[in-house]
Length: 194
Image (cartoon, rainbow, N blue to C red; front, side):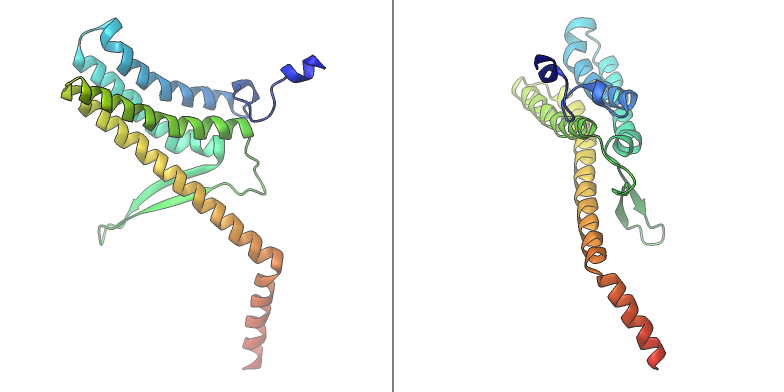
């Protein structure tokens, strides 16, 4: 009986339950490493602001790219990008989600993904307050860049998730009620009546 209670359950925060453990660990590495370099780089390793700035920016950029193009797609089946119309200069966000009928999302991957996605901007906001309170505006520039990158991914994936849920709901409502079949049948019959 005790053995069953110690076994991790689906959705627990254990990377061993992940469907994509390498993707998950790489995602978490980039998320955590940029914060750790920012927090401990100056105090423990070097007093060189430029070196810490560059390493943190590189980690943030890698995290942004990896999350947007690899981790989001593999862990929760979501992907987004921004397209620009070259003629008008207008840009629009494009959202893509995996088909829920062909792909099931692992509960552990989903929990890790959303927790890490929302936690990092909150931590950077706290670090921005600390930088302001300690009168170190030079560090604030790095924190602002980190906030822009993390908040952009957070907003985009949140919108992407809402978009996928809405399209899944709409498609299931249309197909389960037979509405699509009735509309198609009505259109075909109206063509033959002419």
